Length: 411
Image (tube, rainbow, N blue to C red; front, side, top):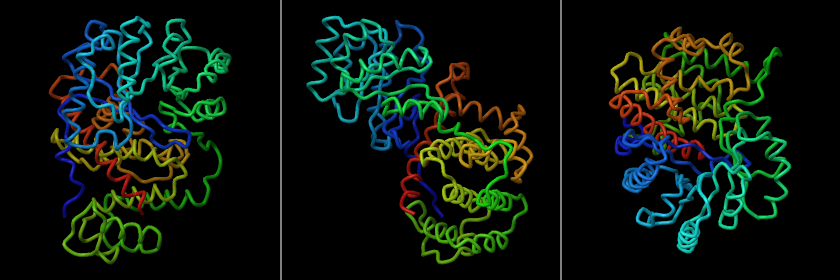
């Protein structure tokens, strides 16, 4: 059996990718962030080098894999970069240049922006806080990004009528929960960046709906340490939808069996218990969850990154790492609070401890992967060799999840 081939897509360059969503919670594009150690991104003197290295790495690795799943890429640019045409990328396709909030509308900046726009580049104003020097750049902006934590939201609302006259796209940054997303949507924002998909409105202290009770029961049986192939085959065969999906999946381009797989039992035998557990869990969650599909991209990426990091570090039980990455988002997927979830799903003790934030090895590795996802400063305190391993695992997870999402949409 050959599962999804991602080895050729490994990245040794240090980049991070943060999703930007549209109003339907589909991925619109991705912001690419420098995560190297050669330049200090907090130091303005190093920003030009960091940006140019990011762009160089981005173009150098684009042939190794589709870094942005055919969606626009957002790249930060400060004043020094915008005044230095030597570093301009040559191909505008799919590139949005984010003008940082510190940039002033100098003659050289305006001239170069106009030149780049004539070549087809699009521009976004980053961290827009309605300062006078930012207003001067609005005629060149295709997108205006507003950091919701930089100002009281009432102040932002008061300024929105002026922005609406500009006929630009409004992007809300640091949207952290479903309530904030819904308010921004009501106020005219059409693009969103943040971790609100992982923080939906959860069910607290009420009876779990029957459909979710069935899902939790199936998850418990599937993830038993001693589950047998016969139990899995019988369990899945009782759910025609799940049975059809697993047969379609194992016969998809993600796998390359020598012959067509025609039954659930045959799939279990060909894949093995651990692999079939993983894939059935994914299919079950995508079938029963009411969460936006993009939630799965984040969690599938995290799960695979956890597994790959454990494998590369020679750690025991990479499967537990995969489960932790996936289960870390189960409350969001099923709209059930964590305590209710843990009371109703049987999982290994080490995964349960990590979900309860006990500082075991799995929990620490989960925090490292989340730091990569969210661009936290703590990631820069990791030793370079481990950071490179973490980075490869992170991008392995992203590429794997992107390919898997395309197949899941076809099922």
